[in-house]
Amino acid sequence: MVQEHGVMLRHYAALQARCTAQVDALRAEVEALRAQVTQLRAQVIMRDSALIWEREDRLVHLSAIANRAAVTAVRRCVDPAATMEVAAVPPPPPDAYLQELGQHATNLVICQTGCISHGGYWREHDQCKRLGSTCLLEDPQGFVPTETAKASHAWVMTAASVPAKELP
Image (cartoon, rainbow, N blue to C red):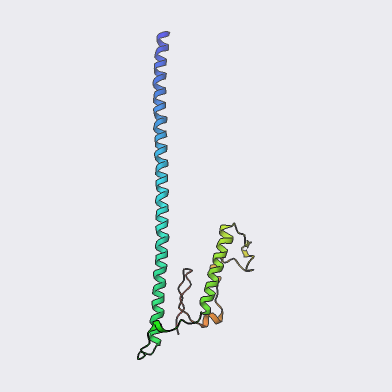
């Protein structure tokens, strides 16, 4: 009986050693997976940051293209025999359409701050308490310029993807 007890204790010790080794292996695997998750999160942050920077650069580039198109249109309108440079032309007064776009962009920023960041502070049943109309975030295409602004026919290219107006 003593001999059987000794055999049983040896088997028990071997089983305990094997379980301890498995737990240690699983613990190491969990640590490795946690490190991998951290590394992958860092890669996602780097990728998203690079994407945002690229989009900003692209918007700057597209804006420069729109400005060049406007300068080209002005040059076509100016008498070719005139010696006046386009750079010497005084800047035009603020355009009504551009002002409306600026107001719309400002409203979007306020809506994003008040409604998205602060849990719908200005929003009540998809209605903006500040403007008294449908929430701009619910209906972003709801921005319609006035007839005065439409008549100005300004070249516009914005990040809000409002279509560029054409010169007459």
